[in-house]
Length: 593
Image (tube, rainbow, N blue to C red; front, side, top):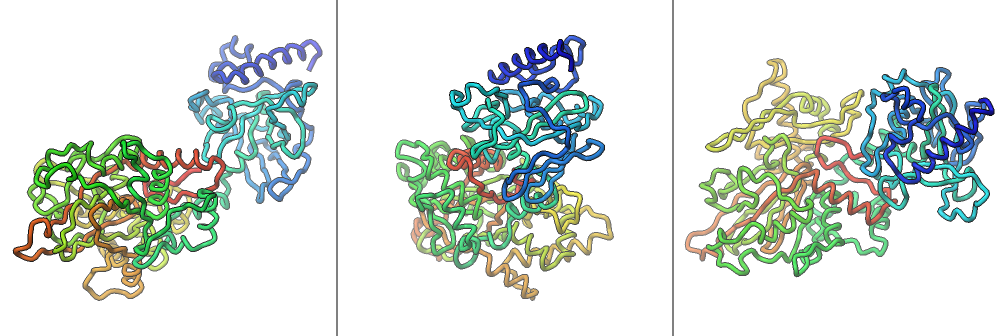
């Protein structure tokens, strides 16, 4: 670079550094001369290296330094199409991926992108010309390094952040740093592209989002629901007794004040620890509620006030939905909204004779394990059932739960052919009656979209609702296999089948079916995407007092995405740097990151 050009580049980079520090829209980072000649499709990048950036060595490999028990080295492919970083294992990053995830392409403060992934193609498929690991000290006390030249680097992100710079958290999106290797410095990857632009990446962010086979498998192991995570007939989930559980509890509950599982196998949380006397939401109790719903699949809320405290039982229709305590819980969990109220109302009442018994739930018949509203494209996420009345003379009527995602995992182990069939053959889910005409077709078991065997892909959803299934529409050669596979899965899910059954399937259903008669004041809350619920049939003897023969549950739903968002934001505030894994919630996708 000539002596006359160098001062101009330095002045331009000084202006860029100021703009970065002010966190303005990345469009202001473009090379000003490029803007004048109309390079409007050019991705927003810094100009060629200057004195404000560490100079790259002529070698394609950086100096070594121990990082996560390995020497951190960057290597460039001969054609510049990718680099390799050796964390604990070698991990490739393609030029197209790095280009698309350049921190300078993130709009502040929203975190949205101002380019598309195809921008790499439009710009001529730039290749990596040079790369180097540079250790930067981002100490906020600039007075310690008054004589050092400073650069702007992406601010460190919290562990759940998909953005390549800090959109939220303790750090600013761009932070001032010096090139100085010491105990507090962190590694950054500097890349020079074939189009003369440059990019800067936080190496810890790259490590978190590496996409080699081993990393993707580790993510799956952290999030896939297995039988060890499932509620059981007797006692808490087996996972609860592992060292991993103990480690997680110590991270989330440093004071060891985690709610404990009761004898029935579920965590019980007091209503008054979630909703205060004045109706305010209490953060710690709400977090506990959400954490164990997404960890175990279900929770019981105890000591919930009766909806009839200020009304006679027969005046229940005079009670507004907003006054229902189950509604207050639902709104606290979901950020303020109840969902899926079109067919049965935002608040529904499960009792004999309700709505002319237009649902079998409004009778005294037994209900086999099922999900509610499986005929919706987006089924309810969380279901809440408040036991408003359970008369002393009600015989039967126990509520049941079984973890469908854990059962699907077990089906893959025991009957792989049946598992494969249920991932490929679509069932028909139906709700048709006066005032309702809804159908939806999809396989019973959904898997993550990966280019690998179905036996190596994460189970992301289960769709199971026998009372609401309609005619199959499959190729003739698949029909018999479907019914055989259906029978295998049903034996895993329904402990009450009164038919000869393979012992390995029926014994699983018996061991992992939770059963309990709810008590007045209890709210059973469960993940409708993951858990199947049911009911034992019940009877009431003739001549008993009305109050002794009532079985009355008050229910509602919340959206899975709204509720999961409330949990993840709460988890971030509680432990911003934790590595707590979130089990798959059954919404058809993987938990990421």
